[in-house]
Image 1 (cartoon, rainbow, N blue to C red):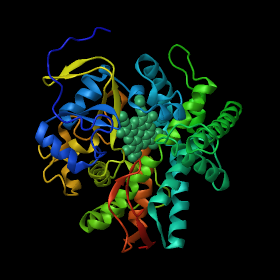
Image 2 (cartoon, helix red, strand yellow):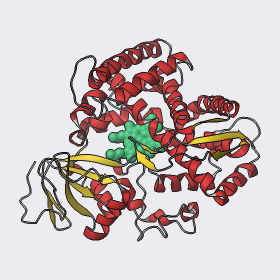
Image 3 (cartoon, rainbow, N blue to C red):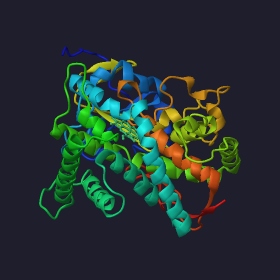
Image 4 (cartoon, rainbow, N blue to C red):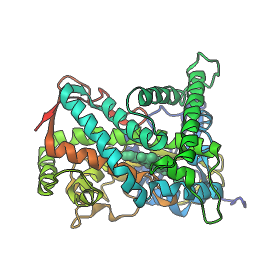
Amino acid sequence: MAVVKTEKPLPPGSLGLPWLGEPPRILDVDFLMQQYHKYGSVFKTRVLGRNVIVFMGPEANRFLLQTGAHYFSWRDGWPPTFVELLGESLFVQDGDDHKQKRRLIMPAFHRQALHHYQGTMEAIALRYIEKWAQRGTFSWLDENKQFTFEIASTLLTGSEPGADTERLSHLFVTLTGGFVTVPARWSWTPYGKALAARAELLRYIDGAIENRRANPTNDALSLLVQTRDEDGNSLTNKELQAQTLLMLFAGHETSASMLTSMALALYENPQVWDKARAEQDSLKIDGNLTIEHLKQMPYLDQVLKETERMYPPVPAGFRGVIETFEFNGYTIPKGWTALYPINVAHRDPAVYTQPNLFDPERFSSERNESSVPFSLVGFGGGARVCLGYAFAQQEMKILASYLLRHYTWEILPNQNLHMVYRPTLQPKGGLQVRFRRR
Ligand code: HEM
């Protein structure tokens, strides 16, 4: 690859102290908005000893995600702990390798496949909602995490509700505990435990793969096992294990975060809640919820988009720069880390009127405020946009439809509702609620 010789300066900004760099406020939206107003679409900083270029706003998003995507590597953007714990899966693959694997995995998330998932998602949603109504008060974040994990795990590993799924869920918590820790491999360290949890999860998934090869069904794992590209290539058992593990990881805390934020936003904006309920009531749904019903909920779509805009579950996308290039008159050096914070474009006053207001009307066909390309990137964008976008919308809309039609909730007093990234966005206190039938 030819290296571009460039005389242009580095982007503005401060690298802070040589080893430590800037304090870790890199995901704080107020700090980022200050930098955006001060410097425009790029600035440099140093985080935990790494030199970082931050790309901000719709134009920079478009460059990083689409027009300049070939200058960046996903694999080099993640810490080595993450690469080892997740294994050879889409998140750490680049170039033709990534393209080929994505094409093979796609059919499990395609429209036709989603039809087959509807019944499973609905049955799980109903079971959780009944449990919540019986319990009355609970921490909704934890419950949403269990709910979305159970959907992903049922469709991707065929796990049974109850002890089986709970065991997998615990293994997952141990696995993710190893992402941001010192990679000491002894069995008693968090990293050692994460490696052991990974091995056990892979064994479980391998058993499920064997099972699906022998008895194919219509779930996501069966589709992954059967998938073939135009040249007849398929995924090996080892590839299937790693990709399935990634989907379980990518596919549950994110949706749980968004569902929790939506419940909070509805409670805080009663006029939005009323309108969303009125839309559901007008559909006069009797009996099972179908995919056709889900397509007739434009206002709920707007509420979900506004939740994505104001409360994006994922803070940022990380990349490694693999070739020196110029962007907006600045040199972006090879070997640096690049990141795009998702919430900056979402709060850009040049795109969104009163950006700090929760206002789903901004996504109505009349106002259509996200028409600026790459101004709404809660699911990423470009060729590597979130693979599970439709899957996530489906599970969130199923749950939301039942909640809006038949239930109501109050946020309990004396809890911390400050939103923090751990690692997805969540209210610090976990959202304690009182829940009952309407
Ligand atoms: C509300 C729920 C979700 C949110 C907010 C979300 C967000 C994202 C974002 C921001 C990216 C791009 C990251 C970047 O550019 O660095 C992404 C990629 C991805 N997501 Fe999601 N996601 C969600 C649900 C899911 C689900 C349910 C699955 C699968 C079951 C999934 C699988 C993936 C995969 C495989 C990629 C990587 C695609 C590729 O590299 O080609 N996501 N997601």
